[in-house]
Length: 581
Image (cartoon, rainbow, N blue to C red; front, side, top):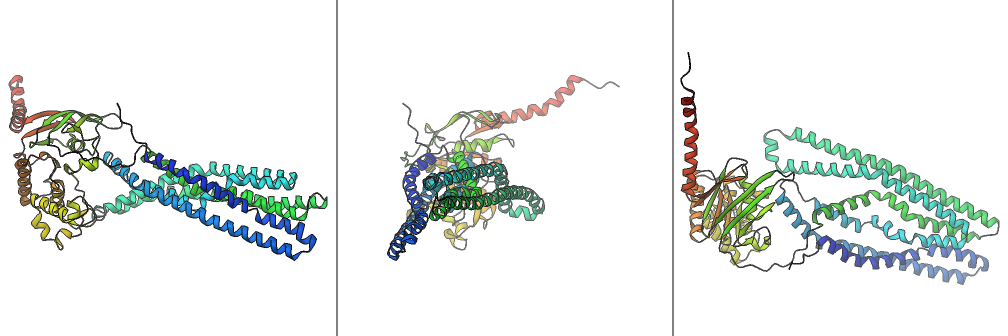
């Protein structure tokens, strides 16, 4: 029996957000009904006050109009607060989901994701809380005003309705003319942001090697493309907006002229003439406002589509039951990894490790070692096959629970802004128990004395990406983070690449200690001294498993291959015989 998958978070949140649409519709309806106050007040003044010269009637009409306007203002305030509440609620519900989805996407496809989904969420939320959404809420009530004009006189109604049709056609034309340049400008702006972020993130390399000018030129190309699209859309939108504004003013003049004509023919009163003009202006206001705010509407719509692409299938986080600590038995069952085009990075990887065993991954550059390490750690999902920790597929195991039992040190040491203790304890809430575990991990990694020598010890702020530390210090603190919490499986990707002799000796000692405690260790390394600590070796060759077995057996097989290759020129020379004079 298959477990029912939870619905995507975006779908759930938007479904719940629809509950707010009904009160918004009613509030908007009340506001638009009360918008009739001005026209009705004008009509009653002409019909009742001017004909009767009654000050009492004028006073009562004025009080009623003031009460209606006050009620309308109250409904406007309530509607604005409701929209702000919906936007804030949506952000609180979706921001964690989007951040989780972005992290998972970035882990699966390095370099292809950033924090754009969170900016998109802000854009959607700001749209909900800005005046740009009011035309959408008010437009369904435009027929109310057209009906009121028809009630005053059919000729006035048909004139207002035909003018509204022209204005609506202008709105559609505006959408058609600005959609493409706005979309292209948004894409170019996004690329420009990504290039700027990359340049700032790698400022040290950029400054040291004088790369700022060519990077700036590439950034300017994208920025210029974005500016061209925005200017083109603004020009086209400005022309349509100007035409729409002139059309509305001409229409108001036309309805006043037609009303005057009807008054002269005794088919309408002066009050109807003025009231019809007021009502028509209100009926056409949402369409004209929509033309003016169309850029924000298009931007919010595009942002929502991008949110759907990133988190459209991502469920909300639910409490995950904690699994018991695994023993450390690890198995790779026909692991396959393919690129998007179908080209294989890894193909048919199989091995098995018992608790407390250690294995080294070796092979030439580009053989797939780091890709395999990411799959084994659960950071990537394989295209086929499984990586099993005590029989549990690490790709299916919830990361927040699996992380308690797995330690991982990537090739690029990724530390975070915060203090040393927070980085070692993986940003768990620091308590005396957590601090003691962090100190224990640092002692095991042989970095405790180094940390004590920092200005504030374990509370030393290390800056973004550990900028205040040296490469070796970052690597040793990263090792302590991998060892934190007594994990059952530790995966280390070239853990000694930045270490000096003292650091490497501390690493070897730490590996010996965790092995003795029954922890399974998988590491990528090339230096001979650390290779002496492993039990087994897996050799990769262009993504395929070449050799796997006990360390001495694999080393002997590799040595035999080297000797065979070295003997080949001699054998070929003997077969060819002596050269002829």
